[in-house]
Length: 457
Ligand code: GAP
Image 1 (tube, rainbow, N blue to C red):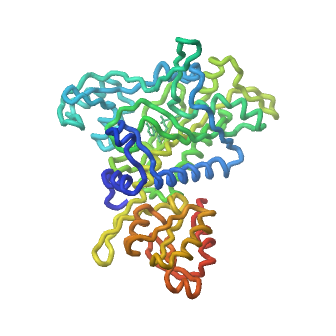
Image 2 (image 1 turned 45 degrees about the horizontal axis):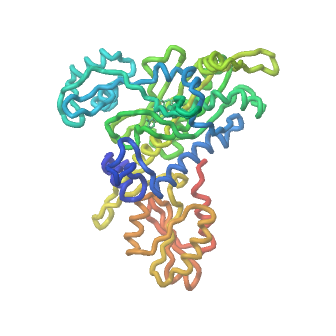
Image 3 (image 1 turned 90 degrees about the vertical axis):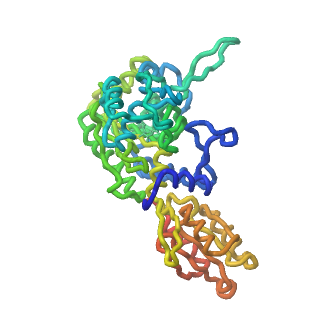
């Protein structure tokens, strides 16, 4: 992550087809972003790596894809209809709205946590530290007000009548409400987990920071249902697994830290975030929460269905405890881009920008570059063969140096050049993105050469 700033990441994302402002031709829509052809590949690869690690490789975890629109009683049971709100302050000068806790955390570059502060304490901190409006620079705040975070929509039932439904603000409720379905249909034995990747929606008002906090985002969430006696060791296990996943994706341990919550929800027995050193400072990347039996107990109370597990050996009946591990796919995307971003000064004095992704995350695994257009037949043949196996990119325009730079900027780990020797002896050069070294191998070996190097294990 050499010389990285948020502006550099945003500009690279726009110019290289990674992420664009949502509804841009209409002047944009705050806190919405559209993934371009390169970005969608990176994000899909992030989701695939997570699913592989936490679902595919764990026989006690079951995947689901639950509905976004849920019975509104779900949100009464979860407490969202009553309590899901943010402390907001408006700048009276420029009329922009901010989260008071974000103002404090951004001002202190993540060194002060507002998590345990009351509204009065946050107002005092902002006043004592003279935190000005990040938009216009004035100090002219309204008092803090609670701002509801759930998006409402309506469902027509009878002519002229509408029922309110909510866009889910988190995916995990789809896991809780399917606890009995999964346990019975899959004959799952406690401890087991239900995992899901899907869109969530929150009416967030934030001071930018690109895709860090948006109103529509994807979550990758997993709920482990267990006995209370084993819950703390499972909690510690997920803390370790969540961090190891990031390290295996290529994150430096120096850029990650555990942050135990100062203040716990009344039902929670422990909670920890993993913080990452984002361009704007240390901020939450994911959370691991010990949620006691709260979630299933509440759904039992509100649905009237017994959310109990019958132990087949001891015949004991109990409501399982939940350990939750939750991470945003878009937030992880921002962290991955930050971590991968490097500026390197080359021998002739030029600077190259290179995204040093783990090859499993790279949008394309290989670039196929004919040295000249008039020898492109073999290059097209190779593209057609390799693109059946993985994402490839074909580029025949511009000097070979410029084409390498373009691949570096979107993190393509290997570039294959087809030159005049290829026509003679069917060999090609493969260039490594990170070392820039080139080797010559038979064209028939390219597929296995790349396949061996792009796995996420
Ligand atoms: N079910 C628990 C839950 O939703 P959370 O801490 O509110 O907990 C979990 O969210 C993760 O989802 C966060 O650590 C973050 O990675 C991601 N996330 C939450 N709100 C987000 C937003 N507005 N934009 C992008 N990612 C978000």
